[in-house]
Length: 277
Picture 1 (cartoon, one colour):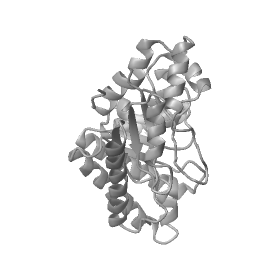
Picture 2 (cartoon, helix red, strand yellow):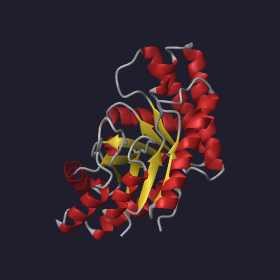
Picture 3 (cartoon, helix red, strand yellow):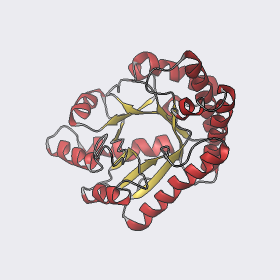
Picture 4 (spheres, one colour):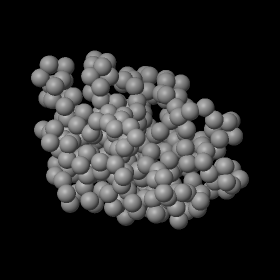
């Protein structure tokens, strides 16, 4: 049985590889390691993103060496970076740096080092209209370069609704990126395509969420959004959650084997153009 956690973070000062060992012990087989900002690597220019991305790639290599997990990686300029950057520089300068970060992420896709650009998008908390507009401009650029290199993007945004799904779908259409290659991370169980407008939901893997999602179909992914932060142990969900939830809900008859194959193998293979084996 293949079991993929579609969104997990690791930090040098967190559990790091030990978290992935817990995932594997619970029956997990594949992880999507998503880039996250590092407190000791401030982003003041493009070189900051290069240094930060390199750290994420190095952690992925360590996991491959020290565990049985298969690791796929996504990198991109985290949306909240913009909020911090404008405290020290003009918004125009910060926007250009973020776009250069998108370009760097795209080059790593071309080099087959990472398989997606993300998580990118907008801050998840209220910000000024100027920050929202700049974030949309940066996100559109990220979608454009993703289209150019043939990869998916992973969205970090405010809470998803049918309206925000529509907005991002139209943004993808504008640059020619397939809507299905826009993955909404930390997504509520909005699986119906009439509601998510063809974007791809990555659902937080609680039993409540999966129980609400599966009656709408198995067109979704499962994630923990584990942030590996010593200050918040086990947040957002613990690293063993996806395999435990999957196997438990199979035993309870909520998920079928066909559902599991779709969620953990067929769907990610199609969205990210990868092989789950």
